[in-house]
Image 1 (spheres, rainbow, N blue to C red):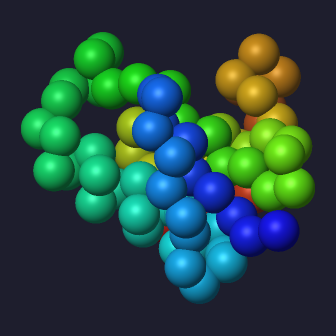
Image 2 (cartoon, rainbow, N blue to C red; image 1 turned 90 degrees about the vertical axis):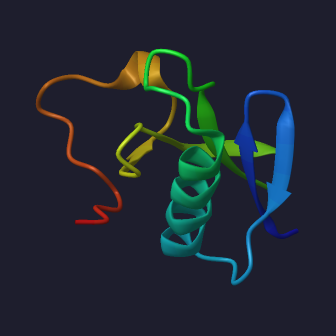
Length: 80
């Protein structure tokens, strides 16, 4: 099954099937929405029906869900 980016209630196929592409797609959707971080819906990357990561507003990707994040957590993809 391919990778999917979920932003709020919207699902987007990620092509190519990479975390970097998911981050780039999220950033494009974020910029097009013109929403500030406080109003941007939560975003997740799904594969095979399972959440593999979540995105912060800046486009970085973190493993698991936001509830697993700590100040010592390292991103699994850093788009800087």
